[in-house]
Image 1 (spheres, rainbow, N blue to C red):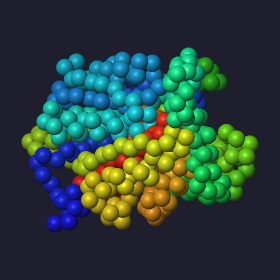
Image 2 (image 1 turned 135 degrees about the vertical axis):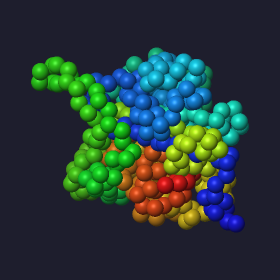
Image 3 (image 1 turned 30 degrees about the vertical axis):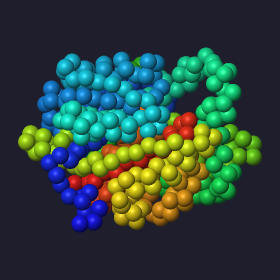
Length: 402
């Protein structure tokens, strides 16, 4: 039996996904969740995931939430959200911050607890309100001069946009290629949105929004990624000014959008899910993380994905498709080029440039998106990956059991 056949096979000890859903991704400070605190956003997606899985919340043994920006690492945010969603106080919870891969790190941590026999059912989730968390208040008041004397330590403070410029310059990725890639991300996302292909992964959330005209609260239902735009072309993106360097190539149209959103993945041991009659939509296979130079942090997927594939003994061509976070077009292009993946197999419904990138949420969001795409296209094995601030990359493999 080939390695891929073994991965696709079913075993009672497998870690399976009972459900994976997300909120819409909305523009920070002006989108659908601009007046919604992260604990409310996460709580709403918790409720929706539990309802979709038809699971007794008392059976959920542990929860890990990926979260990057809120004070205290979001520990109170996560706990309050779980309790407000009807999950009993007997269910434990923690938060994890591995920057842009936090949501995936949360899923991986819960999966490993199930593999180790510590729990049978858990939740890996991610949330970020960049409306309420992003900005000066999320930064420390200073750093140690002694530590910053180390060049790579100092490189950890390079603005993310400059790391994108470094990748573009070091590896000769032109502005034209970046704009073409980004335009395709917008086009794919717009086509998917118009065709309703995001509908099954997005859970509608009712929230209150302050109407700027009347300054009164009104209740709205948010069920659509509001950063997706139709009609974007490489030519229209070519008119935008560089954002980080006068002679640079990174700008607002070829970088990920600053967004608000949450995603929840409920995992269980297969034997437990079968015994309880829970739905099974997919299987967790494996995950891995790597380190790369901080000054070119975006190259992370180019090294995390091959390491993952080596561990599961599968070739890059045996993977049906890839979800690679588009932090910046420069780093996404480099990663795809370096590994040798056909661009036609990457981000089939668009990526973060068009959809948005709520930092702690993205890793879990991509799991929900990947499972949705696999079901729609009748595909099985997919890999999700992202670069990570300060110089890392993470990748994970999943199987759809639609």
